[in-house]
Length: 456
Ligand SMILES: *Cc1c(COP(=O)(O)O)cnc(C)c1O
Image (cartoon, rainbow, N blue to C red; front, side, top):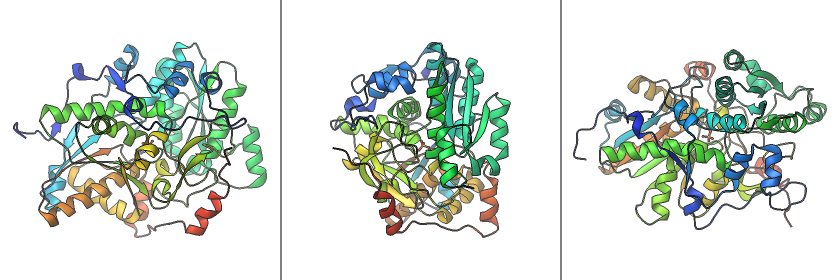
């Protein structure tokens, strides 16, 4: 590290990446293909374009092009909030008394409050270019729905968001953000779809789940002319768009000749982590460098650390393509926890393959330790982090404290995916000492594994 490192490393607009990086091009073991849930056959372009925009269906199955150009209109939008800063966490280092160097890539610098806007704006751009009228989607805690609403407002498309009912009721402010940007928001399960009516008949009074909201959004997209479905995580197209995070991080580190040892991200469906680590995993696959890449998931929804590597449904209604991934089973409903964005039962097929091939590690952490980390971070670094992001903070602190014991000055980089201003009910629980850890038992998991589809 020759040059003096500033606390905030900003790249100028001209160094905004011109292309996303498609890690699959460099993977020797490619992720398994998506399958049609009805026939069990490989889901090809023709099948995928019924649900997704044409260009996104192409990106979903593209395993060969290493770089995919970012359209000029998308780059122009990115310019409003990118390149995002890479911050040297000097005050956190000091509080921990660690010889480690800690950096975080901050994605909370836009109104949606998270990295999700990076993919939303790309997906909505392609929908617009195809001449569609609108899109449908689901949202859990509301970050993805907010990002889609913002992107649709920018490109003048209709957005219909199915919001998991318990969040719809508990997070009225996120709902109003979406409505302010012009989106229609329906609590899920609802009476407006067959999938919703079926689930309501079976489980009256349910607070809903992501898997259920996905089914409703897909069904509505299929039934509405000139409308497609968009998804905020898990899919390979989403990881592709999120590589803007990793590419900028790589450029910022190179600018100051910083070589990371450990790269950490929280993992819900895997999009921010996949985007952050992609260029670094690419260097590993090409034999150019070696890093420890770590996925951090909640102990209440431990798909990588306790799930099965198998084909599974992506949604409760079983209408989306089947994906081979680490999964807890599509019927798994995680016990309530405060990281809505990390409550998905499965994991990106790209990350699942990297983990299976031992290129990436995974840990599960309890939410009390996560909020201890969140509060220390808020008090030292100023930014009040999202509960999801705080999983990455938690593991970064663990690694930094390990360095303190061994005296090693490792360089740790983690993704700070968003801010927690809409999560104050969770902080309220923590501040009142009422936060609890929910961990599923092996018997709970066996029950949902029993419903994994049998692939001939
Ligand atoms: C959605 C979300 C996540 C998790 O999603 P991934 O696809 O796993 O990245 C993490 N942090 C925040 C702030 C989110 O909104």
